[in-house]
Length: 362
Image (tube, rainbow, N blue to C red; front, side, top):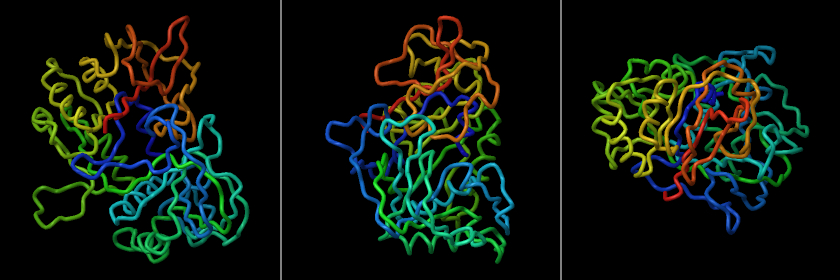
């Protein structure tokens, strides 16, 4: 899954809609619920009718290779599932993100729903009860035909007549099922990939594999793109009006981090988002976005826990300790409104792998 990015310890995230675009709405929140990006959110029970489309996000149902022609041809996870959801949003088709209220990490989010596969085309059209974990996406029946039309044109280049929709798995329900909808995704994304440290290719590889399209500033006829490479000079000029959904920083160390953290602070305070990885974490947390006194690097440890398993950023099939990395120790405390995504035990201390900052004000 694209959450493989998290393995490299994305530190600061603030999930919301694209800056300069309409706000994300949370029509399914129960009265009194906090924001959908933070712990404690709870949705009302919502009935998903027959004829809805489910896009699985687990390694069991969503694992066919993008060029497979038989059910036996599997990979680890088909990242094009993210690309398909991205294309739906670009086409104005709303997507519901289903996450069970207060679930344990590996619980099912949609349970015992009668459904059959509509894609990949080589799967037998067997209707049976299935359950889906790790935050599947749902398209409601009124958008069914439009979503299928997007799937039909979501193709390799040049097109392959034997492959439909890059083999993204999609199931159609034949009975109703009651779920909790965490977020209603109703507009497109625009991503800034930092090349300030010369390491943009790390994040580009994930985005390209998912089917995201890079902006080519020299091509004045290009109208379809999803992300843009930004230089260190570009980041120095970030401000409240900078129009990206998220800035991703793969790996970046600099002697004067404040020159970069201050414009990024303006971007974040306006509702922007930041995903930091590797040395980018230390560079940006030098500004204490999340912690009162910063962080220090500690050794890795296999004893781990997910204290907030129902937040959107923890929806992953597997564990983050599948890749060995250094961890970070919080020197004092995290700021109010921040929350832990994963903790590692080390003696009497707690090491923090990932922290999130919700956009409560947006």
